[in-house]
Image (cartoon, rainbow, N blue to C red; front, side, top):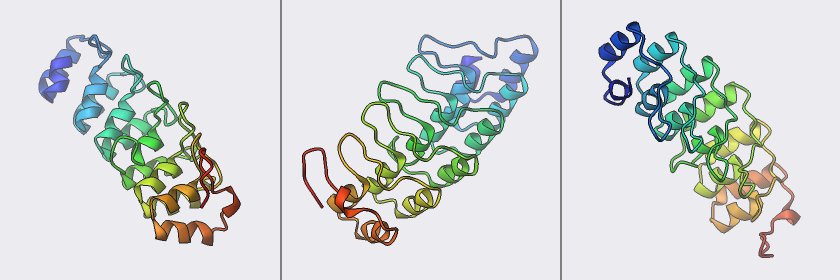
Length: 203
């Protein structure tokens, strides 16, 4: 099953499942069939595994879930299917507590606005923070300059005054020279007096 899902051999996987293959079998890293299929963005394989009652929240040894693996690859169709079938949209992984919204906002390297939209449609907690340093999804999209996602998060009630262990949203926007985001935060009446980093730098 593991090789079939890694190699995206749908017919082989279907045959093995019909013959009683273990849909939850995992390798030494905890990578399961549903994890592999989600990472590959293989919609047909994901649907097949769900039809055979796989656990859509089966995580790897380092805590990564199928949903997180799909988000990391920008596979929005798989993300939607997993959530429809019960994937935990607030699951945290790793030593610093990576979670789906943060991952889709740039925590895995890239921002995926279509996945952010899916999570918002499913009432994700927009103020969830990393367990390591308190960073939020709003903070990382501000840092990366993803203005359209910034607006969506704030319109979904993201806290403009929620700080990480290091700084506040307005401070980051100012430090990164994102003038459009600074203007937007001011337009939304962010408190400028809170714009200070942990080192005491002020906006």
